[in-house]
Figure 1: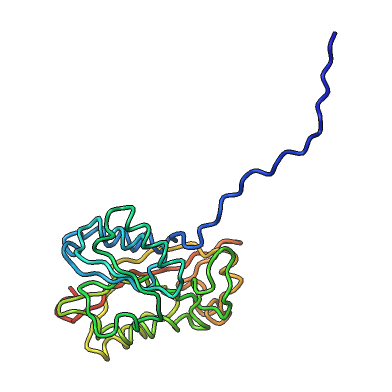
Figure 2: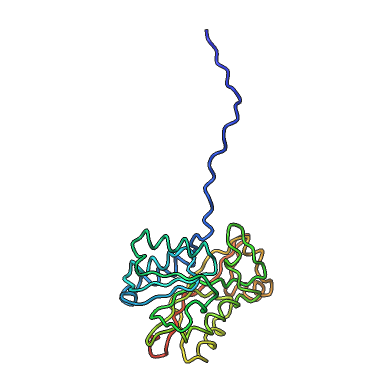
Length: 241
């Protein structure tokens, strides 16, 4: 009778998949869903995405028939990844990418459509696990990037052009409305939904915002929290219906 002995030989560690630091969020999904709901308003447009990240929103615009695609981001990795994605999907010939700060790379240019899912989470922390430092950070009130974007938008919209952006409900929608109104633009809410606020984000959220918005635009159920977010459209008053 033979016997066998199980050797306690250490196994090599399983390969750990690399984390996609530019992976899309729930916000990205809702933005794409909104753009897809009106394909006729994308077909043939010259589109800019401010903060293009992975490039997936620009890819969606390409599928919908945009004639030109432009992406701006501060992260070198974002420019590289977005460019590669558009090349792989067959839209590289109509796409251009620039690394730089907000509107500077497209100074003097205008677009039919501007889209953005900007970092606009109210926090002073500039570090979130598994993300670039630029991800989500919006300063204590969440508006550092948002205000700069809205302040320069009018100069970069072609006649009849519009912007479609994500906007957390807890960072002051009326303030955004006032900023664009001062620049002869109008703002309307296209869609409102709720997104999960992860524990690491909740722990880093500005306490005054969390306190003031509790049971208004932020809803907590035990350890879980959800925040209201909008998709808003901005353009000349006669084009915002």
